[in-house]
Length: 188
Image 1 (cartoon, one colour):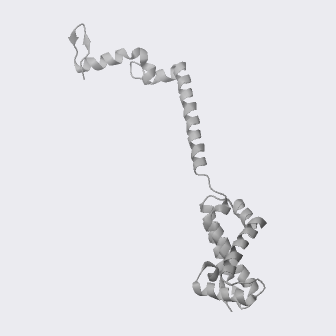
Image 2 (cartoon, one colour):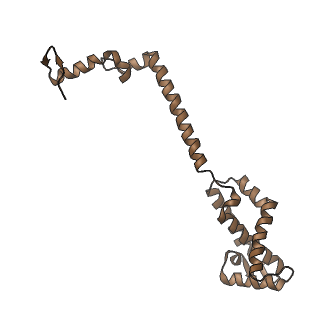
Image 3 (cartoon, rainbow, N blue to C red):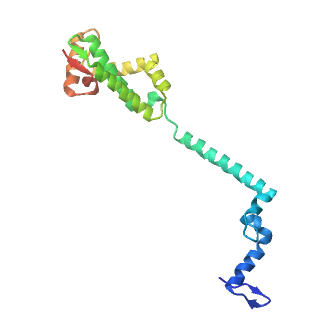
């Protein structure tokens, strides 16, 4: 530290500290204390209170804007656009169509229930509400879309509508493969 000079004489370190405090006595509102080192000046000076309230307002507004921007950056997609959820419902649809069209294959109802609960838990972990999940599961439009995907898969694997033996063949293949749809079914 460079010693401050008064009247051409260098001061000691102790007198430098005193000089700094004395020089800042009129600017004490900047430091939040007066020359005696008390904090009372900050609360007594109405200008300082107004300045602090402006700083606080801008700080709160700034924090709010950051939070809103972050939420926009991490906005969740529509539930129908989450591939894992859509694929899960397609597999459920495949199993359901096989069980309805093949008398020699039955559903594993407890597994199906647990499967649906796992899909729901996954959707909740992504931030979807019960109402959003229920709306998706109950949507006729989504049921048609997902069933269309399921039928495209089934037809590519030899299923012909109205021929139960083709559903049974696919059902046995899915069970043997251990696919998601196959784990929801059992041969009688």
